[in-house]
Length: 208
Image (cartoon, rainbow, N blue to C red; front, side):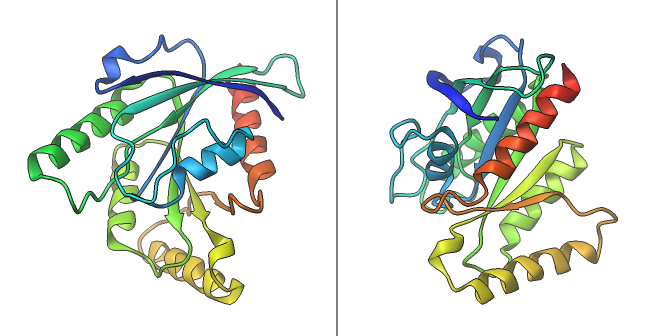
């Protein structure tokens, strides 16, 4: 699959105001400054699509993008939504603001009926972080389908990246029967792009 067109559609603070749920939807989320916007731009081959910033917490709303893509099979959806969600783990904002964001994200994740998969971004440069493990554990409890996307693999030595990823899964193996699917990516090197788009294509075909 290849993305032919990606267009910013709308931003909302309430899932009820999101676009009509008439097509598959894929959401991207992760800790602040995990490289989410860069990954989205890499997938869509548009460096100006999602706003990037060195300052954490830039994304504060539920951002919808309308995607038009090529499908190998005619029965698959060729139009779908890509959603850029606010990061979690807001260390430098007021408690009241943090709770409002958390509630906004939870409502979206649990109530958005056409949400097919959540891509949870994990910074591969670091050892397993408690906040990431807690977030995916919550997704599992809510029975929300998700995949892991390890980002910024070009920013660290390959051996360190491999060790950090293995350490992450070692923790999951201690309590999870089945491990989530994962992708290894680099926005700068386009690593993982084909695999992510292929995964989305397969999902679009399976629900058509």
